[in-house]
Amino acid sequence: MTETPNPHIVDADTLTGEMRPIRRAVLALGSNLGERMASLQGAVNAIADTPDVWVTGVSPVYETDPVDCPPEAKTYLNAIVLIDTTLAATRLMDRALAIEDAFDRERSETRNAPRTLDVDLIVVGDRRSDDESLRLPHPRAHERAFVLRPWLDVDPGAEFPDRGAVADLLESTDQSSVKLRDDLVLELQ
Image (cartoon, rainbow, N blue to C red):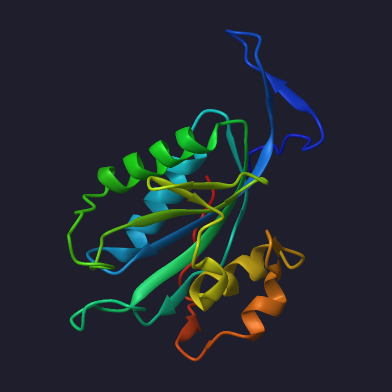
């Protein structure tokens, strides 16, 4: 397991000497095309291999019905990865998009089209952003059981910025299509 840095210290960039705070970030993974589990495991590995990122937790895997997707969409596998990072939110978003691309994610005009891999930034420290390319905290995650359920599993005291306890938010969602897959385990190498 990767060593977790002390969240109360600031990391100095070894090249520039610039001080960068360590932030906790929550990333949601999802896949409903191709080798779904292999894509999720590949994403966990790629996140763990990212410089200035320390994986601190990986949730159990859930199988979920598609939400707001085209009728032909198949079920998803979903998980949450917790990290500590000194990367800027924009650089973390760039990395998430690169990981998706590495797993042949095809972008479509169709909203919520099926995908081989989805890597969403849910929360990056206390960062707020309403840019078209980066919205933080994620604008719909607080309503989605497929994000909240695995997040609560890996961080029982989790708080969603400006919304409250993840446990309370989860209570107000429909969890009927969120099924734990005990037979699938994501490994942190």
